[in-house]
Length: 229
Image (cartoon, rainbow, N blue to C red; front, side):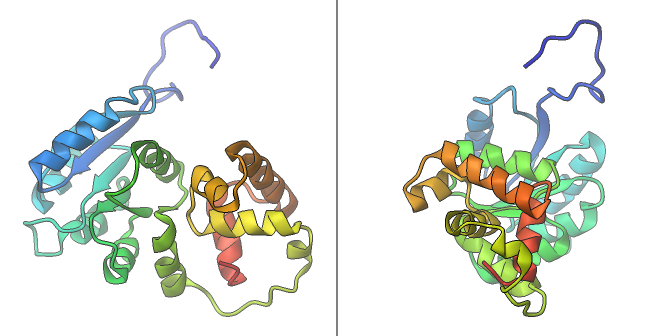
């Protein structure tokens, strides 16, 4: 990271940690999340907490977080829980659902309401940090086995896999592409394929370059259109 001199404002300091709002109705969960995220001060900064729908909506409007870590089952409001929060504030900020639930109905409802991703509370902290960063950057983030629910719900019509772009990829690059498009982290993909994280990074860079894509969000959409995941 390069050093710069002179005063910076939060708006121009790209190295500033992401502002995160925690929303969960269990105080012990909030305490645990606060403690875990505090271990990564350079990446994230918790700016507040909320424990129900009404508190969450007010906090988002007041604090302007970059990302909201949002439990799906919340009291208050009109009874819609975290889905209601996302629907009411998705134009103001980005939401990452963090829930004990892994039901297809909850996952799809959250995404339809405007959430950018959905991970379960079994996620490890480094992977959660990575998911927050992806969502803040405008990409999607899902626990691996939840991505299929979204692809099934939002996938477009069948597209043949026999196309020139796919032919540009090696067999290994296709394997990596499918895992990343499904929402696997680099570490999870490396474990699945028994290769190093560095090798995964190299393959992803090659895939993005060959397909002329900018990020994993575009890669997911590319793969979804072709029903490759």
